[in-house]
Amino acid sequence: MMLASKEITKMFGRKTAVDHVTLEMEPGHIYAMLGPNGSGKTTWMKMAAGLIKPTSGEMTFEGRPVDIESRKQIAYMSTEPYFYTWMTARDVGKYYGDFFADYSADRYRALLERMELNETLKTRELSSGMMAKLKIAVTLARDARVYMLDEPFNGIDLLARDVIRACILESAAENKLLLLSSHLVEEMEAIADRAAYLKNGVLVECTDLEEMREQRGLSMADRYREIYSHSEGANA
Amino acid sequence: MKNLMKYEWRKTMALKLILLGITAAAEIAYLIGVFRHDENWAAISAGILTLLAFGGVMVIGLNSVVTLHRDMNTRQGYMLFMTPNSCYKILGAKVIENGLSMLATGAFFFGLGALDIMLLFAKFSTVGELWRFLEDFIHSINNEIQINAFGMACFFLNLLTGWFSVVIMAYLADVISAALLNGKKYNGLLSFVLFLALTIGLRVLENLAVSALVPQGTGINTVYLVRSAVTLVFSAGMYVCTAQIMERKLSV
Amino acid sequence: MQYDPNSPIWLQVMTAIKTDIVTGRRPPGEKLPGGRELAVLYTINPNTAARVYQELEREGLCESRRGMGTYVTGDEERIAQVRGTMARQAAARFANEMEKLGIGRQEAARMILEEEKE
Image 1 (tube, each protein chain N blue to C red):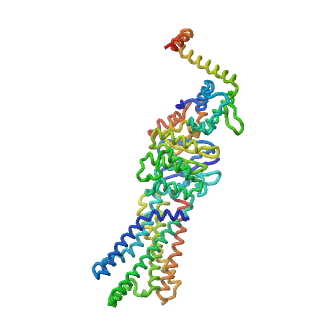
Image 2 (cartoon, rainbow over the protein chains, first blue to last red; image 1 turned 180 degrees about the vertical axis):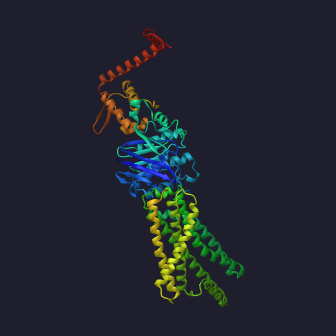
């Protein structure tokens, strides 16, 4: 198992964001993490990235608790923009180069070009769509073992989504694990092969998508509707 | 570590440049005043320079606390905490960058002040009055300070380490409030109360330690040096505490 | 390519490639894109792409040569066979649809011929 959580729980004050989630993920797959806003996707990912400390339970990367070392191999992209306001796209690349041994400046440049972004752009002046693309470009410029992209399609127009899907697929490999969260479920239907459904912080199931289509004739979106309709927060 | 420090410097650079700009302007005004024998210009700009010298170090320390606060409480913090660096390193880079900045600022103003005063002596023959004024000013801070290079250096070192420890204390208070009281009400207030309590507590401990280490009647310079050393030791302890809490409890 | 998300995606991509092969758009012996390339080309999961080649091999339409990739089979007889099967399946589907509309096979056949004239 590459990335796994065992009975992991995170409370913020009295609110339980992630509730005893046990979830195991293997390399060679692209996982979709699904659920309405507030279902715990982001919190789970941040715990895997080592940014949030669990209240109880454990998150492991290749059998060892996530820590400083695992950050070298897990590339996490937060849904919010987080670059320093003084940075240009070039500075962002340099920053990653300064801190991540697996970062490739060439790959970054190639990705920027495909996303039609210029290195001299100031991050402060980027539209939300451009910012989203920049975040993906710099994250995928790392040759990491795990890529966790939180809402990679947010704010990105239809045409650019195709480019991003292609870039994501090119980053996939036998020994790598990709985890994407999005409430744009349709965007991930064909590129993910497994889906983890979270509801109110609880893991409902983690399914193989082709199997579900073959055996039950259900798409990822169909199952999403089954799980979340008639529940609070299904409006996302 | 070098990279972490580089970005800490980059984050706090703007304020330092502004400070440098104001200082340059005040210094030019002072020089004009001295060379034109314009007492008003010289006096006002000398006053501003003195204020900058004492305030500048303070402001740089404060700015560093604000930066840490932002790194822990806004999404900007992902930039730091997603990198494969332990909290000891992340905080250490902040401590060292800030310590060096304060030291450099202190040394800069110390040197500038010495030059400006020397210029004054060179320019005016009747300096007796001025010298007495300077003496009075320094003795108004502490009667025992010796007015020579070594004495002044001891005095300023004591001042700097004092400020340095205040900054580390503010780090600790802020980290406690961010890591342990995350999301709770009165987070900021508690952090401030904690800071005051820590400051008072630490000063009491420091006084006890200094009076235990230094026998009665020791010269003021030795007292200053011992106190500086004690302050630095306490600061190191607080740094370890702060980093430990971050490592174990901090969620960004 | 647009997919029907309710049926297996490997099957849909496989059908598309099969069509390419039996119509000669991908001639016998031609090298097919690698697994990862296929995934990017069709915007599908790499495991789905691998499954596509597995199934095509099982049907005898492709062969993977060790270390060299996957090729369209050189067995033209097999391709013709598959083409026949696909055509029969299409005809059956069509007949079935017409039957639902209450149209008999002969009338359906006549309609096809007329369709061609137009």
